[in-house]
Length: 65
Image (cartoon, rainbow, N blue to C red; front, side, top):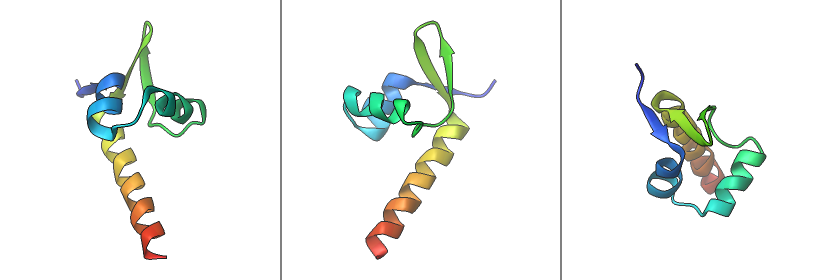
């Protein structure tokens, strides 16, 4: 089974944004695909790695301009 990353872990430890910012990301479809168990969200490690790589790529492109 593929490793899952808890929503809170991704938000606090990996991305480092507030709960409100994270809520806006989710509301606007800016997060990787999530798996919902009850009231909690989890993300596949592979999806998170891809999502982070895309974000880093966008940041590097905007700084180059």
